[in-house]
Every structure is written in C-alpha cells, then in structure tokens.
Image (tube, rainbow, N blue to C red; front, side, top):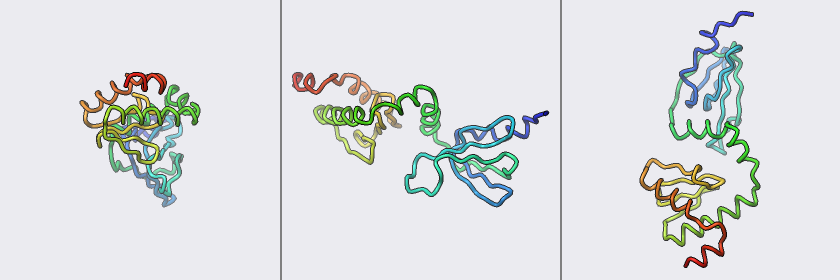
Length: 172
C-alpha cells in the first residue's frame, strides 16, 4: 500500500491550533488539533477548556471524510499545555493522589496568604495577583502567565514553600 503523505499530512501546519473541521458528511467539529495519522490522514482533536461545551473531549475525524480545516485561533500557552499533558511526565502526574493534591493546594494557599499575595480561587485554579494562574497539581511547572516578572517571582515563592505546615508556622 502506497501512502501519499502530501495528502495525509496536508494539515500538519495546523497542529496544536484550535481548528474547525468540515467533513463531506456535512458535520462540523472544533477542537485543538493534537495529531494527524500519517497513514490514514485521520485527525485527532482534543477539547479542554469549556466544561459547558457540547464538544466531546476527544474527537477522531476520519481522514477520507475531511473536507476542510480552518484555523480559528492559536494560543502558545495552550500549545505548551497540550504538549505537556500528553507526554509521559504529564500522564504520571494525572495519576497522583487527589487527596495529596488537595492538601498541597491548601498549604500553597496558606503560604501565598502568609506572603501577603492577592489570591483568588477559580474552579480548580489559583490566580495570584490577577496575573499568574496555577493549575493542579499546583507545582512551579503548572504556573502560567503573560507577565514574566510576576511569573518568576511566584515560582520562586512556591519553590521556597516549606515542606510541611509546621515549618511554615515556625518561620513566622
């Protein structure tokens, strides 16, 4: 079987971008283009953001049914998140204990408050100084911001957080 990679990989420039896929069967799908199968041209779309969205979290569009792919938006932060989420380390982190993550989040919130930072909780995220968003499991790798200076300062503060709450109380 000969594969024409010019056909199967014609949308490779759209990888890790939010796209709208129109099909010959008159269906329209939207999502982040995660992968393209080089043999079949099948497109793998993923959706993370909208829990209210009617889109499925993972959509497989058959390559032979794909009529057009249009880029709706690009987001460097989301691109990095998708790459991180789907690597081995990201998958291992998903397996981490929910209870441990909740306890760590409580300690982190306390630590940020002790350091007099403005914090707010939004769903499962922590927002620091209206600038840095920290996603579960709330490590320095999970901090996202467009403000580099505040991002670095927040990461340094998280790195200096004592291992236990008792150590934090002793340092007061």
